[in-house]
Length: 65
Image (spheres, one colour):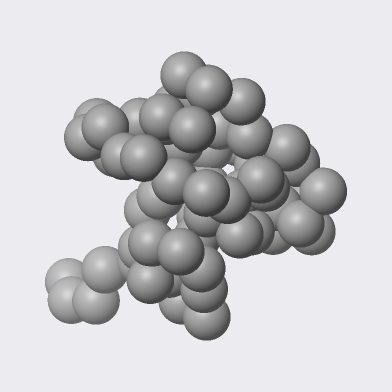
């Protein structure tokens, strides 16, 4: 399926957001996610099904000050 991740098109085999994060290399990373512009809590990732054309945003915390 084709989805957009942080503004870049990706072809993924993942069915859920959690699977997509794993496939993209963020499986164990501490990140915030939004799906189609709506915040998606970590607990919802394993059960949130992706659909062709979805937009996933993945944000990692930054260090510094």
